[in-house]
Image (cartoon, rainbow, N blue to C red; front, side, top):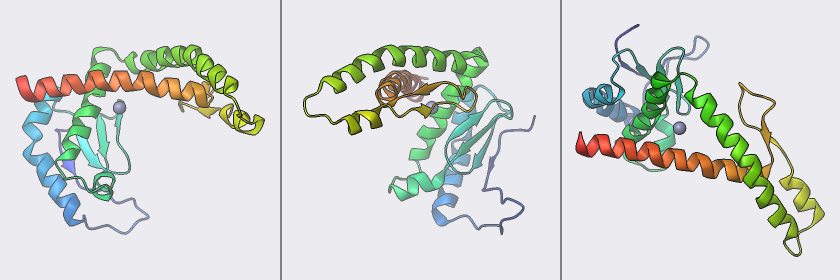
Length: 183
Ligand SMILES: [Zn+2]
């Protein structure tokens, strides 16, 4: 495994190499300056960080992908990305403790979302003046995971799922803040 590095955008073979924008460069410098804290939180030096599209952690490779443009578009300071990196690292920490953690969490939240989603749906259905057409659109199902393509949620169940996932994120945020301020 390689040492932790903050690599600039890796050009795809078919793409022309792209110069990082001033914003991306600022973000990259900030990440490099924060490297010590990031590694301390991860408790692992084998992770690498790569600029890309979206935010995700790939357990197989130990690569954390981050997306500068997401922050730039919204007018955030480059420092804000640090929080996103720490958020991804909480997934890494969970994964290291238990490689099945995220699958289990997903399945648990999915099952709970099915139960609460039914109550939400029934409430929507009982709402006065709601048309059959709108109600039908609520029944539209969304695939939740590439890994478990058969696991789908309708719009009411999805609302419930997001709520449960939100609680998990709040907990992770607490872990981050605790680390940043008390450790
Ligand atoms: Zn997350």
